[in-house]
Length: 183
Image 1 (cartoon, rainbow, N blue to C red):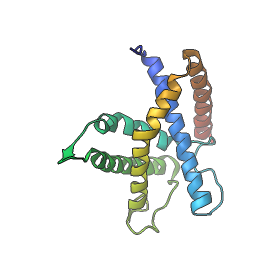
Image 2: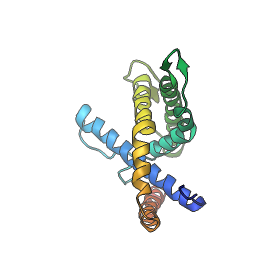
Image 3: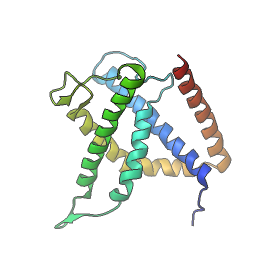
Image 4: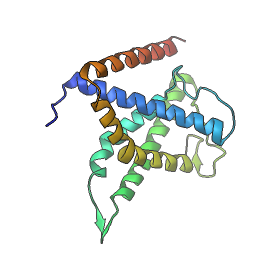
């Protein structure tokens, strides 16, 4: 039986999940920019480091809100339709996160970092159907593939190893955020 983690250990683990998903989000955005759209490279975030906090927060929110649901079964006849329900919930949740993030960024920085006005189904350039559907797919990958692998990987770290990785990443992240605020 695995031992229970105290509050600090849970925070450290959650931060490591946050950081991994924020870094994967940055890689996803750069991949779209460089490979798919062929616009060339630019740092896609408002921070210096290779991570986008909105992806980290979004992933943690998906895990907190939808992981219990993703483990249940909802059958229509012999078919488990729960993955469809979870997908639609991920799309709704991530769309709200993206919309709220656009307002937060506009309030704090004067604008937001994306523009969907050229997309056919969009709202104020802040959200669009195609991005929401991609986030839905990403959320499913997180819930059913990445998170179990990430839990195994972080679970293999010793307590001291987890604390060290957390401390280094947390300090770098705080420095990055503080330097952004002071700019």
